[in-house]
Amino acid sequence: MHEGLAKEIATYEKRTPRSREAHQRAETRLPLGVASNYRAYDPYPIFVRDGKGGRIHDIDGNEYIDFNLCFGALMAGHCNPAVISAVQKKLGTGTMFGMPHDMEWELAEEICKRFPVEMVRFSNSGTECTMHAVRLARAATGRDKIIKMEGGYHGLHDSVLVSVKPKAEEVGDPNFPASVPGGAGIPKGTLQNTVIAQFNDAAGVERLFAKYPGEIAAVIVEPIMMNVGILMPEEGYHQALREITKKNGALLIFDEVKTGAKLARGGACEYFGIQPDIVCLAKSIGGGFSLAAFASTRAVMGLISDHKVFHGGTYNTNPVAMAAGLATFQEVLTPATYEHVNRLNKKLLDGYNKEIGKTGLTAYMVGAGSNGSLMFCPKPIRNYRDWLKVDSELWRHYWFAMVNRGVMAQPYWWDEQWTVSVAHSEADIDRHLAVFAEVAPDLAKAQKEPHAAASSAH
Ligand SMILES: Cc1ncc(COP(=O)(O)O)c(C=O)c1O
Image 1 (cartoon, protein in one colour):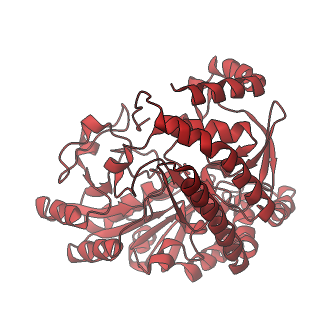
Image 2 (cartoon, protein in one colour; image 1 turned 45 degrees about the horizontal axis):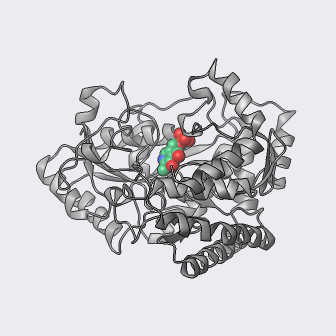
Image 3 (cartoon, rainbow, N blue to C red; image 1 turned 180 degrees about the horizontal axis):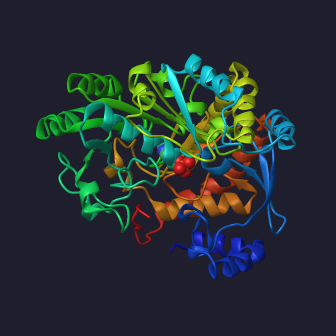
C-alpha cells in the first residue's frame, strides 16, 4: 500500500470509530457484517444514520454529500418530498394486500408512454426482473442458452451470475470467452447455458450464434455497462446487436436497471434509438422504495396471459412502492429534472477534467445522464478486459480521501460510478470539485511513486 492511501485510511479510522464497532458487532451475526456483499470493504464500511436530499450522516455524526445514492438507485435524492408525501398517504390505508389496484395500470401506462413496450409486469428488484426477462425469452424461443457480456452485471440469479468479475487468468479466449461462475453454487448445467461475449464486440456475438445455431434465446446487455465504472457502447454496437438477434430469431434484452430512469425519460432505448424486445427497470424508478418492472411486446407478455410463463410475488405492486413509483415518474422524472442533473453532471465532469489536466493525473472522465466516473486508466476502455487494468489502489486513495473530506464521491468499489440527484445543488457540485482539487495533486504524486499493482477484480 502506498503512503498516501495508508494515511487516508488512518484518517478514516480516526473519523469513524463507531462504524468500526458496529461492524465488529454485525460480523457476529451477519456474514461479512453486512446484508449484501457489495457493502463490505476494508478496513470496515461506514454505517449510516440518516439521509435527506443530497446528504447523509454516518453513526459518528460525519456529514457527506452523497453521490453514492444507494448504488445509483436514488436520482430522486433521499426523502424526496413528492415521494414521501405519496407514501405517507398510503401508510395509513394499507401497505400490502396481494390484490390488484388502480395504480398498477397507471404506472404501466407511464412506462409504456416512455419506453417502446406494450405490456408491463412489476416486481421488487433488478434481480427479479432480469430473471423473468430471461425466462420469457427462453419460453418465447424454446431455446435454453443466453449470451451475456463479460463483466456485465444483471443481478444474482444463476443464469446471469456468470463472468461478472472473472479474474484475468480465467477469462480465456477473447473470441470465445469462458463462462466463469460468479461464486460457488451455480449448477454446471446453468453455466453451459450462459455463453459469454465481450462488450463492444458485435462480431463476437455473431460467432456465438454461428457456434450454437438455433440454441440462443436472447442477448442480455446493459446498454451502457456500469459494472466497470462507465463503459460506453461504440457507435453502431446496439444497432448491430438488434440486427443479429433479429436475424437469428433471438430476443434482445436491455437491462435498464441503472440507465432506465437516469439516462433519459425513455432510458437507453430513447438515448440510443433502439427497440429491444424486453426492457428491465429498477433502482431509480422507485424513488427510494423496492420497485422493479419488466416490459415487452403484447406477443411476448402474452406468454404470461396464456399461462405459459409463470410470474408472481407477494410483494409485487404493494401500494407503498407503487405510490413511490408513481410520484417518481410523474413528479421527479420530468424534463426539468433531466435538464438539472445533466447540467450539474456536465459541470462536475468538466471540473474533474480540468484538475486532471492541471495535475497531470493519468486518468480520464466518462459520463452519461446523471452518472459519471473517474477512470484510473491511461485510455478509454472498450471492454471488461481493459477495465482489469484500472489502478484500484489509486482509486481507493481517491475514495477515502474524498470521504474524509465529506464527499462520498460514489459507492465504494472502482467498478461503480457517481449519481447526481435532483436534490443536489450547484453549491454541492462546487464543494465536490473543491475537495477533488485538494485531493488530485496527492493522487498525481502517488501515481508517480512505485507501488504494488493491485488487481482490479474484487
Ligand atoms: C444493471 C443491473 N442489473 C441488475 C441489477 C440487480 O438489481 P438488484 O440489486 O435490485 O437485484 C443491478 C444492481 O446493481 C444492476 O446494476
